[in-house]
Image (cartoon, rainbow, N blue to C red; front, side, top):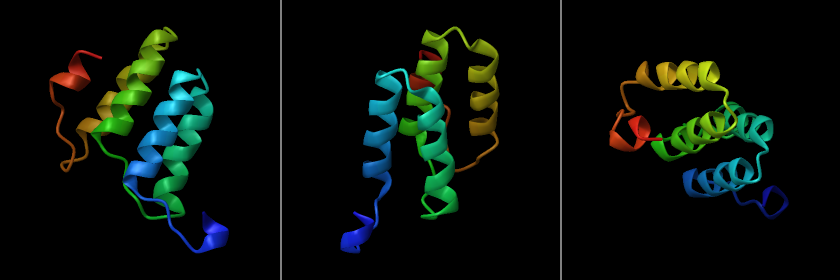
Length: 87
């Protein structure tokens, strides 16, 4: 995409993070989350956080999932909805 001059958007990143999480490639999904903001100035949304939290829970990384939920709660633009709490 970058070589074609096309910048990824939130939907692109959401799809990528979700796919990585589904493949149990959680560390890579977290790298994408960090790079999307740092390199592309695209802020993670609820869908991305929920994908990450769900994957962490499935891997029994509950402390890490709670820390991520707390990080999400500090962002006033993100709403902690039922999807987050039922993940």
